[in-house]
Length: 401
Image 1 (spheres, one colour):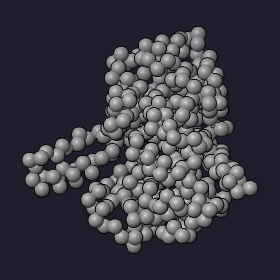
Image 2 (image 1 turned 30 degrees about the vertical axis):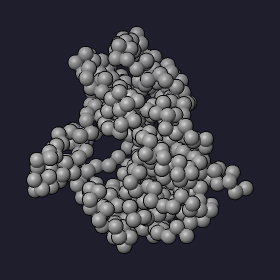
Image 3 (image 1 turned 180 degrees about the vertical axis):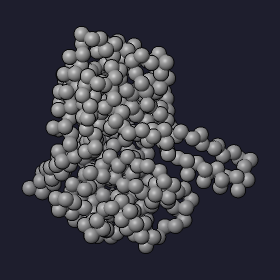
Image 4 (image 1 turned 45 degrees about the horizontal axis):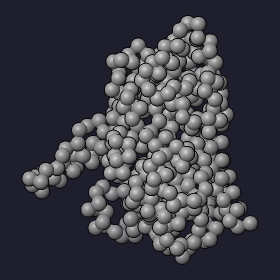
């Protein structure tokens, strides 16, 4: 079995791409460990490179430098700079090399680079819906590719209204894939020494896709993070917030009256300052989780929990999460593994104040300890990568018994 990733070198959930390398932008490679574990276990990983397989800045540049030779150079450079073994990752460019038992992985978050292959190629197609937007354009591309399976942290059909609106045609199979914590996230400080407050973590991003705006009535991708961000003073006795905007530097707006030089300058400025998140990366997140007894890393509008949920729990911090069912799907129980609240700022204050009381410290510590043990047992990189591989292999077995 071969696992074929479409333009792996342009995928910021796995690698620091050429664009990120150029502007010095940090990447949170949430799925890098999966590739590492597959290679460690001698699974054949393939990077299928297409003419659209580039992360060069700007559509203008990408669309005018369409050379497979240059794409190959970019792919090799990115793989090498990310310290992945070039000898172990096969590069593929010819669709005729694909086999019927190949597993093709499409990341829907990057539609510009993921669908540049014919719809009738051989192989079993799987969509990875991490950081799902639900836009109709990507949904139509998925439909054209005749995707039969999708991977995600949550069952989108169960929790995401926009998914049900734009993916009503999908009658395939959902494959669970959990987030995992990096080994550096550890329980380093005794519970009694920690601050008796909650720390709020997470990045605020926006989504300006028309369907998203129409369905949710906002362009904020994580509205509950915005809720905490906007109520920082109201929550000051209960929460220390480290939630910050992804775009910390104001972007320069391009005006119709701008001359060519000014337009180039503004585009370059916006590109070089995009998503640097200097404030968010200015502190050690592991140390910060270990400073507090409780934490909250609010979910996104479409129902997916953040990777910070797993990271914070791995540090022995009691997680406060929206009580909507997704954590129970992961095997957690409210009041045992995490503290549940109804998603409102009023209930958040109420729950934190309850656990701040001296008579409830033993109960709070027990939740933090039980949650930490659960996450460290079920969400390690070894466990999540193994489950990922087994899920894919099961698909292959079902199709080719």
